[in-house]
Amino acid sequence: MSEPARPGFVRAIGRWDLTLAIVNGVIGSAIFRMPAQVAGLTGAWSPLAYALAGIGVLLMVLCFAEVASRFREPGGPYLYAREAFGGFAGFQAGWLTFFIRITALAANLNVFVIYLGELFPAVRTGGLRAAVIVGLCAALAAINLAGVRQATWAVDAFTVAKLLPLGLLVVFGLPAIRPEVLAAQPLPATPLHVAWTDAVLLLVFAYGGFEAPLIPAGEARDPRRDTAFALLTALGLVAGVYMLVQLTVVGLVPDVARVAAPVAAAFAVLFGPAGVVLAAIAAMVSIWGYATGSTLQAPRLLFAMAERGLLPARLAALSPARHTPDAAILLFAALVAAFALHGDFEWNATLSAIVRLLTYGLTCAAVLVLRRQRPAEPPGFRLPAAELIAPAGVLFCVYLLATRSWAQAGATALLFALGAGAWALSQRASAAATR
Image (cartoon, rainbow, N blue to C red; front, side):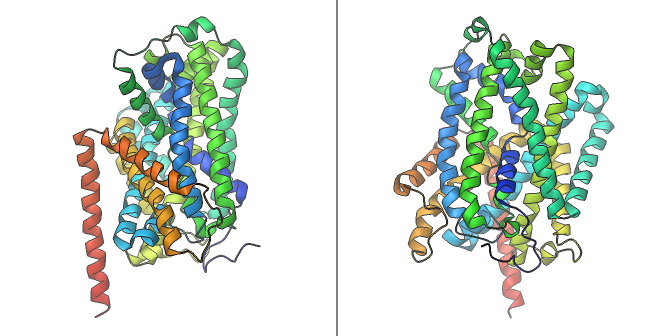
């Protein structure tokens, strides 16, 4: 039997709601952009790249499964790092996770505008682009201000809707694969190990986002029991969809690395011009579903941090009528709009991918730390061979971070420094309040 919700929150997210939310949090715009990029790096072997990246991500997902199953409170990676490594590490994990969610959603909204531009080209630039982005963020805020039950239903519906066209592509595309097209996909001129490393890095972004639905754990019915099931089921489904879509695309579209919209090109091979329209609509549905879920999850992180005095108290206020953190939702939507207007998909996605590796590594390290700190509190899911898997997850993150450029490292360091300054201000305010 699940425990009652914390005062003010409604426990409305069930096991399958959580599973679908994780699928929705992972499958966004990447599946509509990545097939060409990954094929450009690994050619006909690109479906295998998805499998290899999936193995690396599985290490981190298994660590998340154990750590998350210890808690019923909202907060996600912020909560895990705080409990394992103390207040400063927790604040930085929360701070960075919040910016991951902002930049990831901003990247997705840019892709939404690109695909909308397939139908209405004028929206891709200028004032119309800005109006579409602001309008999307306003609509996302309105849905989530209506309440967690309504937002959860929307996430479930959009997750199913985004999988249907991808399933259609696989069902009709796999039998139509042409072996000569698959075999003729060119390989890059760069060294093999460099190309495959770059492909795995791209795919870590594509697989990322599984942690976001864990943030609103205070509104899940039984997170200790359901989290591991939801994470592992969702990862298996996502990996299967990714590999089948990649195989279909590289088997239908010649030299797909040169194609800007690879899924649309595959639909065009199967269904002609109508397929391009279908692909554009499918991409927008997928991104909108991802955006709805992200706007449900990320403000709960602000709530969790503000509730503990680390951010302004206004962000911890709940609406008396709807039990939603209204101020946090509105702030998140405003920041997403600002980042989406400032940077394009590549700028936002790159920053999001690099920063999330830091939080993933912290959670992997937290597995063994929490076992030592809380031997009398067994998790809902206990990771087998944790002494091997948790360090392997940390090393996977460190390796990928070590391949980044100095400019990218500098942007991450700037975010970290801003977080350190915000932490210092919160500690000063806390000390002044206790005098």
